[in-house]
Image (cartoon, rainbow, N blue to C red; front, side, top):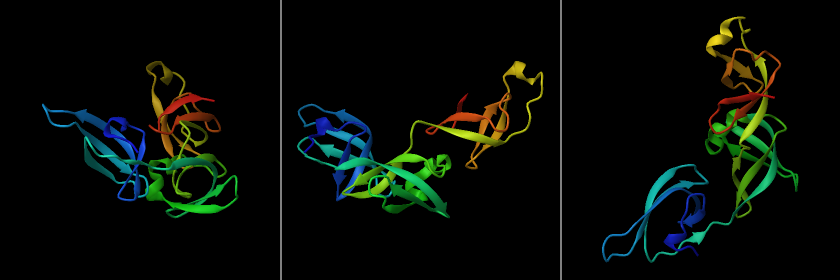
Length: 185
């Protein structure tokens, strides 16, 4: 059980039977009163964010969440199908749960699935992914002095802004948190 002093960003707790990830916390104490911890919690099943304040004497149960290696197989509409690499069981997650990470998934890619009580509830992408440029306008010689950029379409359909020297067929590294081009591979 966690006391409010042990609540930190990145910890997972159980509130009303659902797992929550602490995304922000701030401790405060006024005069002779007990301390309070104000938090922002992200529901790991639905993705919704709520604000909650805990009093000094409250105890919170840690959420038994872990990670498993899975492979992304395919998407069909708003449904994404994954396969557990240990048991070879397949499961589906909705695009609401995956969020913006869906635009960086490529068939056959290995990712970590967050698991709560044995059931997958989300995925965690690596910090960067290498993707192939399939379409981009050619860079014009002489335009590189200003450090200009252009848009490139990647193999999974995502469009990112890249420097002018990037050509079709190049492999580039993209940050999955910000969606920004990092470097040519």
